[in-house]
Amino acid sequence: GGLHSFLVTLPKCEHHLHIEGTLSPEALFDLAKRNNIKLSQDDAAFASPATLLERYAKFSSLDDFLHYYFKAMEVLLTEPDFETLAMNYFETAKKDGVVHAEVFFDPDAHTKRGISYETVVAGLRKGCERAQKELGISSVLIVCVLRNHSVSDAKSVLEVAMKAGHFSNGTLGGLGMSGSEKVGKPEDWEEVFTTAKNAKIHRTAHAGEEGPPEYISTALGRLHTERIDHGRTLAEDPELMKEVATKQILVTLCPLSNICLRGIKQMSEMPIRKFIDAKVHFSINSDDPAYFGGYILANYCSVQEEFNLSLGEWEDIAEHAIQGSWCSAERKRELKNLVY
Ligand code: HPA
Ligand code: ZN
Image: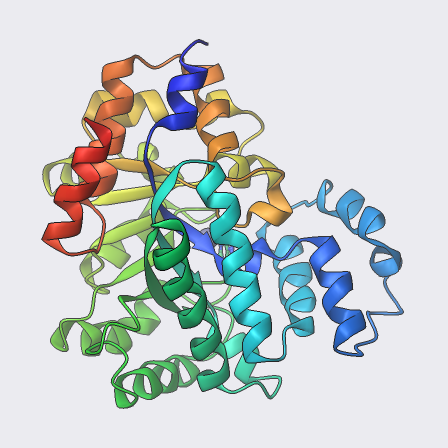
């Protein structure tokens, strides 16, 4: 459809972006060389950046992707590695018209292989500070617990972050949950999320990416989440969809990700029109752009190609994205002034 140049310049908020998911095959090989890391010998996909990209084009599921995602991030060792990773993302985001980014990271995937929580956070934080200063992009770091690790792992992640004072000093802006939807049930993490709620820490969780809409209602109920990440399968439960609309819960859709990981066959299966009709607030996001063939603008454009939304509908999407962001009221006013 039309509106391409409008979409390029439209100020965007990104709410669903895993910083480790921005590690491109090229960057991975550079870091492996610099850090003296031998890439997996028993997987021919790791022969070159080109063979890795070919493999990424054939993901069969979330778990198939996660295998490569967790392997690839093993080349990240030092604070500058994390700073550069973040800064490279922000530079690309800037070109795509991103003005505010809320960025997930998986500390447990790094501590499990001997990289300290402090190293990871210090590097990412520097990247965020530079993004603000050099690019005018505001950002929020969201610390994720992993569904494919244990509940006690999740408890320690939250405890370490709270003890470091990172939620009160502005280093971290919220708690998220990602990883495989095939392991455990969301309610297993109830205690962790209740602790976060009691400490007035913002909460979100991946739900309804591959899993059923019940995962979404559990996240909203027992995990007290204020947003839903992915939430694609929400459209399968009209009652729940109404509730999400009424409560103005932001759903952070990731269209290209859902296609790449075969949750859907094609863009027409994304519930974009259903969400608009039901007045569900949603944002459009890139998830793991180095793996799924495109950053945020590519996601916006693919949605537009399929759904041919009106200018007013895009303005509503931008408005809801700002409203659902976890930045200050002052920053929200600034962001609104950028859109209108
Ligand atoms: N789902 C779950 N976990 C993830 C994802 C995702 O899309 N990306 C990175 N970790
Ligand atoms: Zn995700």
